[in-house]
Length: 80
Image (tube, rainbow, N blue to C red; front, side, top):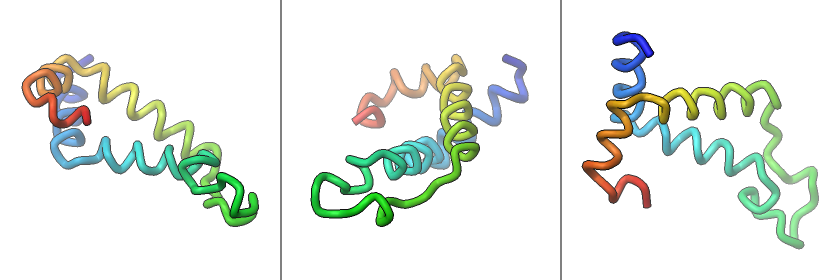
């Protein structure tokens, strides 16, 4: 990973972008959208598959950064 990519990953992590990505991915799942038994599939938030693909790839790249992993180790509260 280049130094620019490391810097962008750290910046996104510090701006709580990881939490936003995780929320987006969670909303796309039936359980995350609250579709246990009370709601129909039409009530589930429709998130385009390309957005989900991009979000998961971006999340993987952020966690691939050594500096972000160091930040996670320093503050374990972020993981919870």
